Amino acid sequence: MTVGTGNGNLEVRNLAKHFTIGGGLFGPERKVVRAVNDVSFTIPKGTSVGLVGESGCGKSTVARSLLRLIEPDAGSVIFDGIDVRAAKGSALRQLRRRMQIVFQDPYSSLNPRRTIRQALEEPLSVHRLGSGREISERAEMAIAEVGLPKEAIDRYPHEFSGGQRQRIGIARALVLDPELIVADEPVSALDVSVQAQILRLLDSLRERRGLSFLFVSHDLGVVRHFCDRVCVMYLGRIVEQGKTAEVLDTPLHPYTKLLRDSSPVPDPTARLTLTKIMGEVPSPANPPPGCTFHPRCPRAAGPCLTEIPALEEHGSGRLAACYHPESWPNLRTVAAAS
Image (cartoon, rainbow, N blue to C red):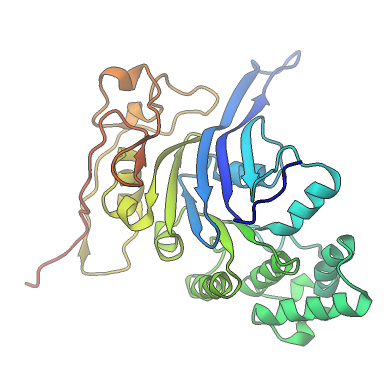
């Protein structure tokens, strides 16, 4: 087993996860769904990387594969110099402490028959992190750190609101003192005002604890606020990657532009020019040849129709998988006063 280097970086290279559907004697034809296909990115220590795209593009599968909640089929996941896919036994248990997840639905991720104290103390007991009294104190400190009163720890999940339950989910992730948190759509199920509170909490935790984040979301406004860099996924592949502001303001890939122009603008005076892109998202079980976005792309021609474009650098730190990369200007303008 490789010894950690101490840098705390997460490096994902050529990650792949495939699922089989159909088959059987009377079932439909057996097909392979390439949910994640050749995905690579890096999360430096203390930074936040966003993973965005439409529903079904593979974002959550990437998130769960990193932590081996589902086993990837290919590729490498290296955290602090340690090969996560090769880790077993006590080595894997130690990695679990350092890499935690916050789920999208805070209610279904909590056992309704267990109090919040039991939910927070259980991982500490499993990892043998202190005596009974020390474990109890650490659980109480975690619930206080996420902004809930101490007495809340002996209540049950159904006694809390959605925002409070998400705070509990964050406390459960924090209780083992992790270095990396995978946040899988952590605010999508919450009201807008509550979303802002949870984002401020995550911001303060990142600054105070020096946490790294993989932040999965379909909300570009949230990603713009929280993430240093962003990866855009389409049908299991990353099609664009770079600093968040640069990618969202001047996208190089037409799919990124489609996502940006589809995102609502919280300004009644703003004028938005939409790009007309025809067609629906192809089936991941039967993707088109070449660039999978070409049936919907206004610039598709030549190799776009037959060859998959590589994710290549276009300027400092900007990556795009497109044969015709072009900087799309930010078409959101404020209407002139009449």
